[in-house]
Image (tube, rainbow, N blue to C red; front, side, top):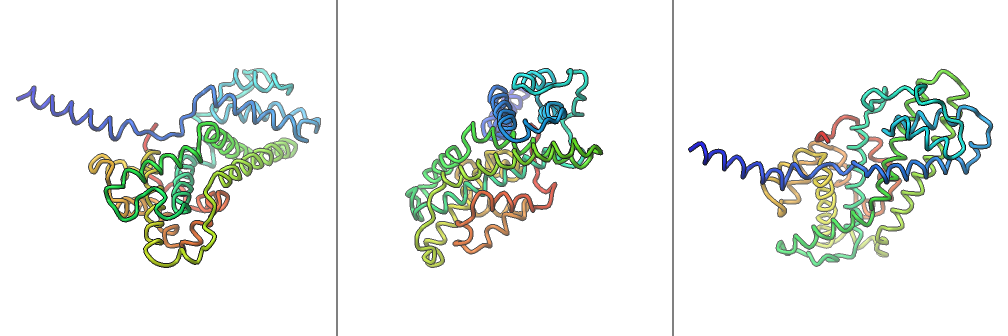
Length: 316
């Protein structure tokens, strides 16, 4: 009897690993790619007006910012000095306490990023021509749309673009936090200048995503009528729930996927997700023409307005 119980436990554990626990949040970035993006960010600052301002604080602030986003102090100093900035000795840089910020929660920022990504994937699916994925009303074509949703997410958020968004978003939070607590006016000014450079980089990334998204249908009025709207809303919800499920940030979707498998009910999944993240209810209530017209900056603005600390997340 004991051997039977142990065997059953092993099977359950294996199923859990295959369908649930192996689906982690994709916020983890390859260290080599993160280092590349960090150097790219410093090079951007070096090529701007800030590098010629003559401030001796630039190198120190950049080094502290890199440590704040999770790069070791030694690596940060090497990056900063390697690009010609004056960097302080490593021992002069105080490490972040467990990566925590005094004002912003990085875990909450990851959750907001997962929501932003999911909405963009859903909007992209809804923008495509009706029955683009050959789904229509046939339930057996569910896997076709699921595959298309995965392809859309990869196209919009490839590894390089995702790494750049991750770095610039986190760096911006670190700088915003430091600006609020910095008593020295000159350092605040330099931090603000760096922050503006990173904001520009984020805007360019959002424009890249906008260009990668399918063009809006020419006749938007047609979106408001007939079963085409129903299907497009279904595509939107499928894209959102699939992306959130893959990100691992909503416990309800992870549970639903484990118990129902791939062919879960999209409407049920979206309702469950909306209970954890009310912004999804707001998005689904928009006129379809307004929903598909949302651009990446619009979606980012929506997610930045959401009340903090609502999204249930898994530990990485």
